[in-house]
Length: 300
Image (cartoon, rainbow, N blue to C red; front, side):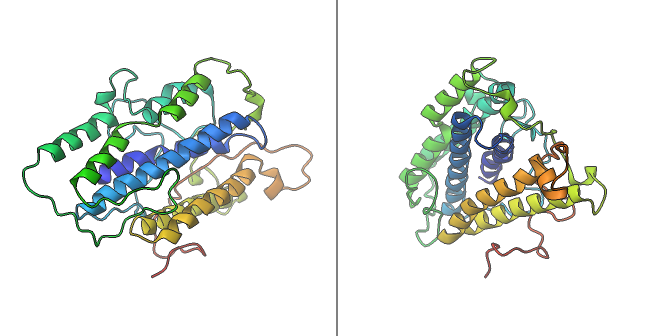
């Protein structure tokens, strides 16, 4: 199930990048759809984590290497187009993000991708003749998760219900995104409402100690903090999930400086500075670094 957790997470940074590349007050309908897709992936992460906890596992997301180096092929779909940290475009949504949100590796055979993985787990559970140990004392993430409340997994029927949800997709959300992506120039879409953000930026693309590297480091540290709070939430600390959702707002504030760096680096500059980009992993401070902390970091 740790592989499932990685798969569900692998879509979150690309979705966040697409969402954060939209200029304020521009493309509002699209922004709402992307926010819903991010919330859906956070819920799916919680489901995968709860399944792992229910059968005695210990999900971990605040670990070095959990955030993939983008661009990369999504877990459970090695033949799928690589996913990167890119600005929004109808092509990105249609050809890269949407097939993964719809659980398909090739756009045609859903069972070849993540849906097939969850289908095989469901069949294995249904055909298992040995009783599984579902310990009701294990704490799971059931509070403050986007969408309808998540029922705790206390037995095989609960596990099958969770696998059914993971093996399907949010049809209204997918339909809304698909309708938007169907046209090369979607009605109401303003391409000038997207920052010209460079793709797949890394902190070491900029000189050590530079303002650009500092802004990227702050953004990646905030994302690492979000993962630490998700880790705590997946082990039953309900307040940590609320903190994780609050950190999405912090990421948006930090992204504003990365999209329009003149407001941070050079206020009053006569010409706008080009966007720096987004980086979700700072090589100098990997996710889970015990020597890096933050006011939001869960303690105890």
